Amino acid sequence: MTEYATLTLEGKTYQLPVITGTEGEKAIDISKLRQDTGYITMDIGFANTGSCKSDITFMDGEKGVLRYRGIPIEQLAEHSSFREVTYLLINGDLPTKKQLNRFSVLLNDQSLVHEDMQLFFQHYPRLSHPMGILSSMVTALKGFYPYLEDLEEEVNITVTRLISKIRTLAAMSYKISLGHKVVYPRPDLTYCENFLNMMFDSPVRPYKIEREVVKALSIFLILHADHEQNCSTSAVRVVGSGRVNLYAAISAGIAALWGRLHGGANQAVIEMLEGILKEGLTVEKVVEKAKDKNDPFRLMGFGHRVYKTYDPRAKIMKAMCDRLLAKLHIDDPLLDIANELEEIALSDDYFIEKNLYPNIDFYSGIVLRAIGIPTNMFTVMFAIGRLPGWISQWRESVDDPEWRISRPRQIYIGPTERNYLPVEERR
Ligand code: CMC
Image (cartoon, rainbow, N blue to C red; front, side, top):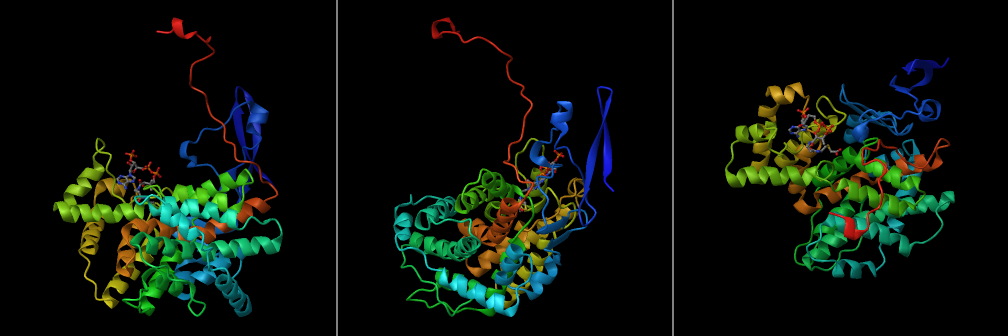
């Protein structure tokens, strides 16, 4: 039986249908509100607006729950691989052994990129940020693979191509930025092993693939793989709703992720911690600065729109960070500062009252540093991880029978009608 919410406006009563999700979350359907009442709703930053129904990822920000297709993130991080999680997100279920093998073969088959792409990298301005380069390169892929994408088989190949090639492109861009020879993907290596090898192998120092590092990278990517309707995923859905091709929609997601309030926070956290170390600031001073309303500084890696408790991804990331550093015998002074900062912030009234907890980016940079990833590539790593989420959300939106082009409204607050003045009459 449909439940309704009652709205009274200018003495008239309207019945608005209530929608209930499988985990009991509720929404009021206002899609006919303007048509029936002439009113729109106002929700800056979409903090209370549901933009779609989705069966991909469930989050409970109050309880710190995150599940992909129903499976808790803790179980996936412990037992699964990034390849398997990618399959799960895109196809809805964990793969059978046969399906996983087939997926691995496809990923391998698609791992090379066109040699001409190296020319793009070589001519890209030297000071460009890797996120800008990645966003352009993903759009450029469309020029190399301009086939139809609406046949099931084509979609599958396009999706696998993107997942496989983004990793090759990222490593290639790093090697070219160093002026080194590009390392090609190898069919005998797994997804994460291949990435590490393409990044770090060199004729003068052959790269030794360590099991702990591969596991850490795999967990890092799994933890980033989807996060329902966040800023970059919404960008993918909004841009995709205009019916652009998948490459263009993903490129928009990469651009959105770049921001320091979103994926760029992992780079910003490390820069913040390095700044504290370099300038010899006390952690107390930094916390005071973050609380000061007249200071634009925020504690990077803290706070979240949805989580009002500890981000479950941050918990796993922190544990993994401690484990990895111990295994690699790395003593990173930034980890000490991060631990101290967390302890002080979590016992401070300002952070307690506002429910500000460490998010995934607080410890992820330290993990990436330990793996050897340069700081300006941290957000690229987030993008590689988030790609399966973007793709599955794009696919869901394309197949959604309730789909409509994204087109919010506004309340206009500019001047009312006035006449054009010829230039001589203006003052
Ligand atoms: N340091 C200090 N104060 C903060 C912080 C912070 N990191 N985050 C939020 N606040 C304060 C904010 O000033 C506001 O105070 P008041 O109510 O007095 O105006 C209150 O907490 C609520 O913050 P908000 O900005 O309204 O919250 P939001 O949901 O719009 O923003 C956020 C969420 C993640 C952008 C924000 O918490 C932030 O800027 N954090 C730092 C950047 C960061 O770590 N981003 C990574 C997010 S996780 C990765 C991802 O999925 O994107």
